[in-house]
Image (tube, rainbow, N blue to C red; front, side):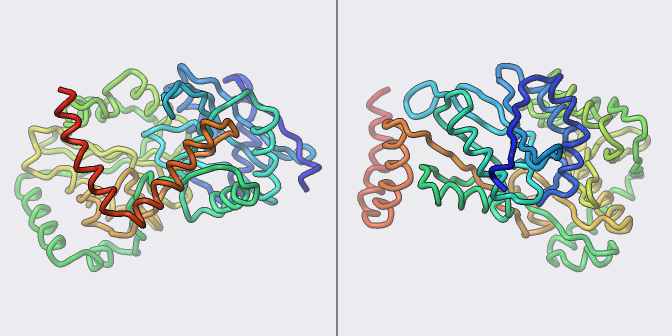
Length: 377
């Protein structure tokens, strides 16, 4: 019951460390349970990316039992024409999923968390939470609460992440592929065998990422600053995750004994989450990423893994394997400042109305943008 809920705030790494036991016990029975909500993930994320943020993890308790967690942080962002105080989940582009962690009585717990944010938390302008699974009962419960309270909020697209339900065999998996892709896959696998490529998949008890980091430095992702080895923060993050639990599965593809590709996955609750896949750019003609991913999928299917999550966005190479996607949203909640209420009204009421009823006007405004940009130059 709401009146029996006790709210406590965790605002330091030391306080966060003390929550590990009750946090993971709560997650084990939560409505939404992914590796991105584990205490280990949040801790590694904070150590790597928390600089410049103020931790504000809200915990809800009934007696001595932890019943909900909101892993939040305060930050400053340029929004609605000014620098705003924004409350966000402890997540970024490397956290492909997040949400409130709630077990029983989810409505009461979410009500208590929102009440705290609105009445007792330090002042904020916007609450921006993403990426949340739109089908999650936690997401749906929170949106109903916002609507029932007439709280100003908006919903935007965030991620469309493909995933694949795995059959028990590699043959069964291939049967679900399109004929064109299956043919191309078979051709590339034959080519890799003819070149003497050997694949080994190992489960690391000693999570040494040396080989993966070495390969990552010669990938196209490294050149764009997004590989697992691009920055000290990313190296730290992926190293800490690898050592946090016995969930790491690191696959290495070797060509004549030389490691040329890696896949960094986490196995959690019989779901294999593909966090990173990379290959040395000089071997791109051999399709090493595809060859390695095929081997990982075969191993996972035959090992009883029930689902493979490609993570990230719905890139074309992922959609070859599966067109089933998980939709994620960004939810933006506005406080009651007049300027923010007006901004919400324009963004989520006026603009959709004009788009629906005056499409020619909207098209005309879009056509004028390149002209105005040229005039400014």
